[in-house]
Amino acid sequence: MALSWGPNDAIANSQLGLSYYYLHDYTEAKKYFKRVLDLDPVYACSPQLFLAHIALAEQSSDEARAYLRGFLEYHPNAPNAPEVRLTLQRLSDGTITTENAIRK
Image (cartoon, rainbow, N blue to C red):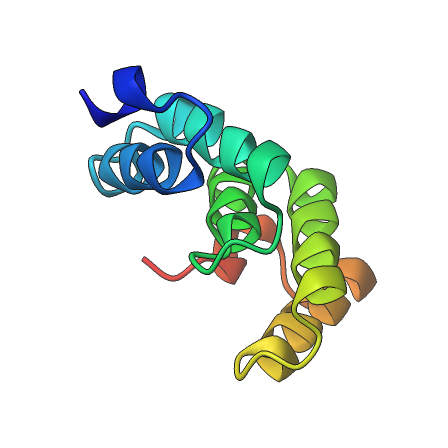
């Protein structure tokens, strides 16, 4: 309903993305998180991290690395930036794989 009132609203798209994400409907979640990125790439919910997690669940390490780099580009000083950098480094050097990179 909120999305029909504001299809270009980052909050509405983010809320839908989060709802689908927690329902494990990653196809739909990805659609709304990508829309948030188009509307507001520095949005507070950090859609890049959700998209990276979805990419890892889908076994797409290249895509996950791209989203992690995007997060760090917009949020280099975020409290979780050191952990994101470490995950990115480990995915890049093969220390971890997509299977063991995500927290279940």
